[in-house]
Length: 86
Image 1 (cartoon, rainbow, N blue to C red):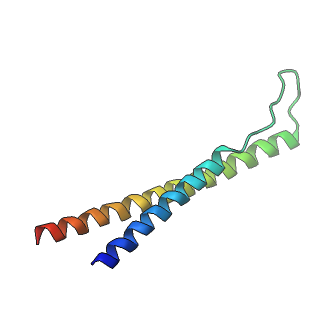
Image 2: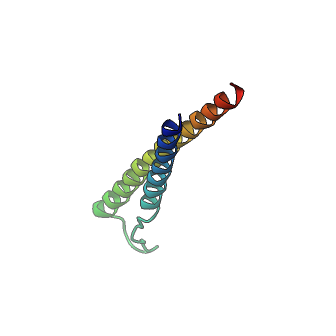
Image 3: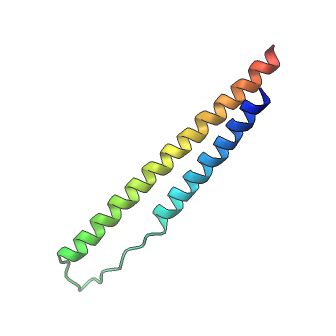
């Protein structure tokens, strides 16, 4: 039982680190500011849309990793509770 809980703890840590990595990489991408008097062209729109798509993908990966870490942590708590009840 100790080996299982150790592995679950390590998986929780790995999933939390992956989540942090994905959300940090989604938040560090910055766009070039467009001036008020500047006209938008196709390259500007392409840059904006590409950046939004990449940020959405990284945010989705971060949310998935956070959900996995939460499920693993809940499973770990349930294992401890089952041991205490017995």
